[in-house]
Length: 116
Image 1: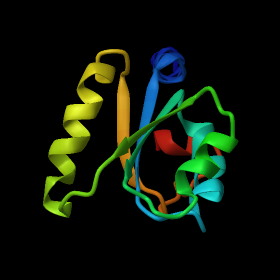
Image 2: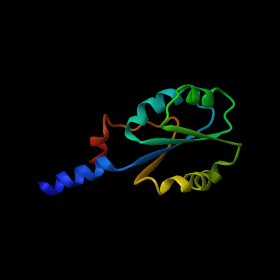
Image 3: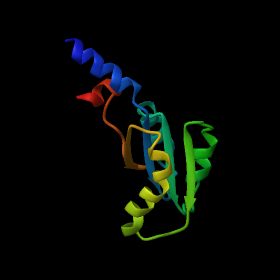
């Protein structure tokens, strides 16, 4: 029983990062970030040359947890390499990170549900 308590304390102290890939996602990005941000300490957006209002919407949220990298167009096969290159300087500050597309939502009500 005591071991479970120690594990729960450790999980709650974990520093978490969400990487979000965006590209012309103005219709969904606000809802996505508002929903998913509660699970993460920081959010790193990698925008793939959006031509709509995606970046404007993100910036208008004025959320200090969110940082945006605006990239030029590139092929989808380069995305994993790009994510790693951008995220590498950040990763040593985090215990856990995950990558989502702008239209993906974590299906949980709170962080406790992610533990199981």
